[in-house]
Image (tube, rainbow, N blue to C red; front, side):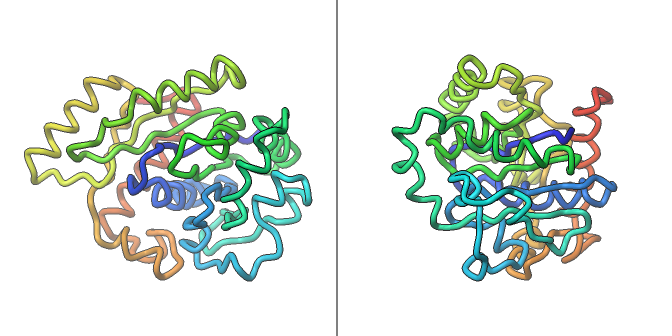
Length: 258
């Protein structure tokens, strides 16, 4: 049965979508069958693969509202072995629509249950919030990866983020684990980045991935071409970083983190 991994941080601009796209592609290149679910109303993971969300009849909103099955709305991407369920602006009003429904925490989990055997990994790109969409995603997950920038305000809001994860563990999903904390947009040339990285390691200890995602212009350019970094520039530092992350994620999930 496929492992479900949420990429989660309530802060915006911390590389969640970049990580969702490129980790999915990295795992696909390792012969893993991957489904990426775009839970962000902005749909950046969808457009980052060159898919026009406005031309799709169905997206994750319809999945959560049980108007269609996951199989009905799955589309192929340009990345090897990676499929996608698109996000879209419809999700923006979903929190109001579901707020009074007793079953809302479990809707995404139940909706993807039927296809978990089809994939080795299901990656969920969570929105930058602590609202219903993120909570639904965490309830559906086996693991969560927390991307953190090595910048001044990196750890701001971390306690609230961890409280949210613990709340989900205590009330909805006791099997949820933090797979790792991923340092992103790292510039090793600056003293600040080094100091912040040391503080992240102090706070999260062995949960910090050995792989660091360096600040890389090719990573920033790739989504505008609708490609993962491996297809856009396979020799870039960003490609090497995400290749290493894919290997490390596989090792951690398989209990062989060496």
